[in-house]
Image (cartoon, rainbow, N blue to C red; front, side):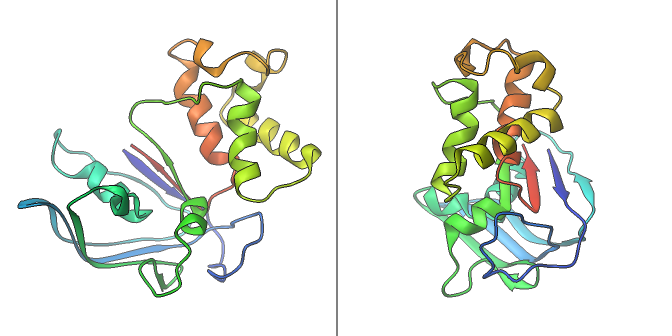
Length: 192
């Protein structure tokens, strides 16, 4: 599990520009519980912009719960409670008026099991861009190519972008899912 935070001054969290240039993360006394089970208690740490951090621990120790709390995927888990404070670029991710969808664009997530959508390689990258308001086809295509280049897949897939993403072998699937997260140009990328 890793978290990468792109270096640059913290952006205004209300800024909805298409390029997120980075943000530090501050976690204070974070706790995550599922019913009576405490997955995390009292986690406190700072992750500065430009940092790559790896968290290592045995299965079930709370690594995924921590990542889910950082982009509020815990909101989607029935019975999950989050306590403490998490700030991105100095602003609480639980502050009134926080746009959760915008937060998840800024804090991308690549899950432990790669889950391509049952669409073409290109449509897997195009869909998140459309959902986040990128309307011009040329910009979506350019950003898809850039993301595929960043994960080293472009030479392998450039001539078969209409191939179903599920047809990719096991090796390229995680990189394809990483490209799907990178296409939104997040300031923070969480890798489970």
